[in-house]
Image (cartoon, rainbow, N blue to C red; front, side, top):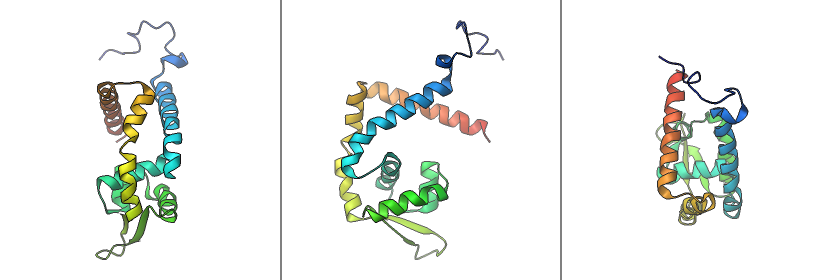
Length: 154
């Protein structure tokens, strides 16, 4: 197998602007920052928005199911859930069928927020000035990176 770095025509393979990790980091940070003014009126941070997206997709969910969907540890997710519960978006309770499982359920307020949130992807796309097809292609490429890095780490 040939070394892709050795095949590059770039004069400096270690230049910051040539690093995939740098491009991903900056793109993630600046893209998430675009969400802040959109999410603030909804009373959500970006991590809380991701939790709500997962719950709008499937409700109710166990803490484990939610952590798996978001690729987070349950201990990392717990403070987000506490805050979402304190603002009336979700309810946390022990499962009736398994006392060990924590059930996370949208409240009426949390379900109603979905209608407002449906405008967010289009607003972000407009802000990025990217076509839907370009965003889909980018998402698909990033999902390939996620799959590849997940496979490489196991």
